[in-house]
Length: 392
Image 1 (cartoon, rainbow, N blue to C red):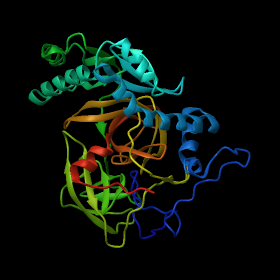
Image 2 (spheres, helix red, strand yellow):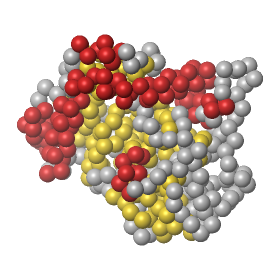
Image 3 (cartoon, one colour):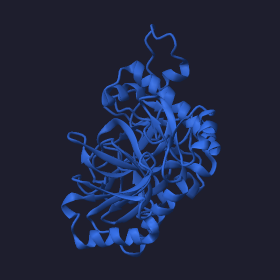
Image 4 (cartoon, rainbow, N blue to C red):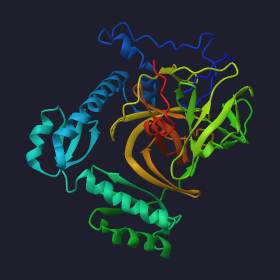
């Protein structure tokens, strides 16, 4: 049962529910036989537990993968620099435990490998892929994308821009026209159309339900990450100036700014007896987790989500810089995952290891049959509003 502890445990879509009277987070101790586990790695125990449950890994394998992903994240900037103008994007390969960097010029591969990354020769540079994706964005801004087009994204692994089209709508004139307009923007040969039976993506806010995280202007959403002075969450949950109330209906603060569609982010100031800490709640499913930074994890890396409806679930990052076509309009620059979510989870946190990744935007499916969820990366939110992430 939750108890108000007079604090906002931001980060990760959950409002100050209860972690005892101190507000600090106690990581689960590692088994005594696991002598190689350090104090820092024990802080990842909540994520390890959730990954083992959702990804079918042993805890040892989950811990090993987190270590490999952290190494890949550190290598990524050096590897990109080494690739130079032939850089074609990068991704984490769980099978090898390494960052893979695409290069268009095989001569650049040796320099990239010296940074510790693996390489793959690809057809297009990251610049070409991003330009093609931006051209499709421009079409969507001028002519709203039809409902039969779910999303489009850069996929470095196939060196293409993938447009997801629902199978039942693939032959609709509006969909065919949108694809044709995209190809006329110089994307021919780069764009791949992928037919999918998945449902259309939707945002994940919900009507007010007593006893769950934050409420404002008749909706319930989840708190994202604690920042100094407040917390960040999804833009589609916001109404600038509207009051925000906690799970116990006590006043927290007000929406200071928000944007949706286009982007999907907002922030709320915190006061009135609430305060912020760098914690993601585990909801009793796992121990609470600490946030130590916001280094962007690569495609292929594991990621976990915490939200007020479905709590903790894990999966992998499938794509970045993706445009998602919600019924309210397109949102740009989202990250795609195969983590499930349900209404009310909107705004909740995505975390990879101990690094904040973003706030839940929307998706399709549910946590019974499965689905996919997109998040708004956190670093652009911080930059947009001049906020500083609170870290442990």
